[in-house]
Image (cartoon, rainbow over all chains, first blue to last red; front, side, top):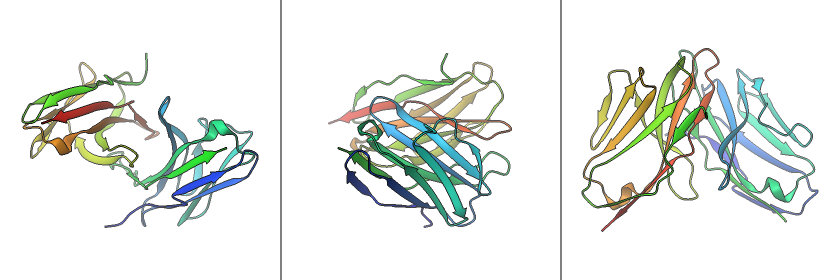
Length: 115
Length: 110
């Protein structure tokens, strides 16, 4: 079965450090999403790309977060500088949207702890 | 009003029970609907799509009521392994941006 691959699975670092999370979407999918999940907020959409173009990043704190998709097989989410409140699980998901009826599939997530 | 609302629960039911969840949405132009299941500390996984005509997959039945703007999930003959959080997803027309509900927690006990 094709899967979305995220790395790293876990990350613990000190505040102020740069954090880079990577995602390999399912081959053939044209849309990639980045989500953050915490107990308090549930699943929040941070950013998403269609055909590698960023379409919406309004859910992302612009001053410290950045999302890119340098090629069709790699999406990145960076936090610089990181803060303790960024501690959460970050999920990447991919899907194919041509008629709106295709579901998205999630990676295993990156569990991020900022000390 | 939130775009997608779910009763957080928890719904605490015995094995073998039938349980139903609803999910309401505010955007009448919503186009696609899904139910996902999320186990503790795991990623959400697609459970089933929700079609206008309704659909059934084994013990699970999903229905869409466009007039009242809600989708439902019915689980029959609950198993211990059904314990999880069930997330509804509504995709708006045009932009195809998915919106997740906060999820409904189900606990099935012996």
